[in-house]
Length: 253
Image 1 (cartoon, rainbow, N blue to C red):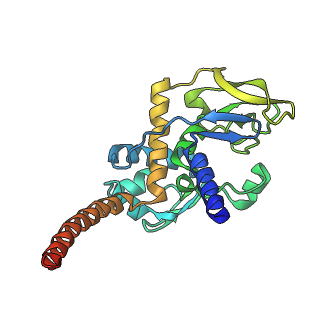
Image 2: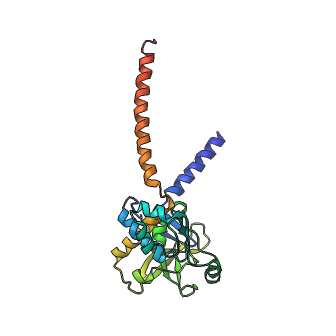
Image 3: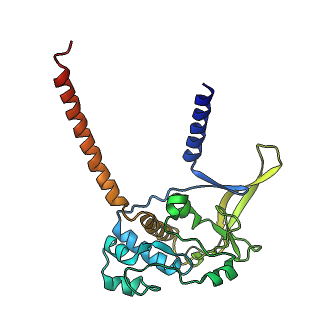
């Protein structure tokens, strides 16, 4: 009985954590807005691929994704791949490698930036969507900015020109543990204007994370389509099995 109660408590804890829609970071917490991306939207994926190669691939690799597979899934010809996306690759079957060397990355940021092939699967696509919008001005940071979701990040705000710089407002609240006050994130306030409207910037980020979501599992649409047919087959088989069982056992009293 004690073991059953322990297992039930653990399962309840997991469900509570999984059901939370906020990400705690240090002494702050930020509610995660849903990304609402759609990996079946090919036009969005094409724009996201453009965004990734222009703003991300200089520092981040995606070593599990090949250009030719990406071009086939996104409806791009080999000529379009070479002309618009293959900035740091030689042949279409190359994977996406970052331009920055490990030596430069360690000197500038302290460590090489992570590969982004499966980041949406490990962190969650909503986390990535909000992370890209959670940078704020911090004069004490070496890069001049910090991030509400990942305090102390060495990543600069590469999208600042589009959104503009923003200030994070924190308020002090008494902690539940009685260890004194803790800082809780409240909101962002604009510091400088960007060259995109809020809606356009949201679309830009959503396209980018949509492409990251696709990269994390390029076969996910096919997997889901096959899954639907498998469920239909199992449903039909269940009906036939029930009918067969009734036929076999109908004369058994």
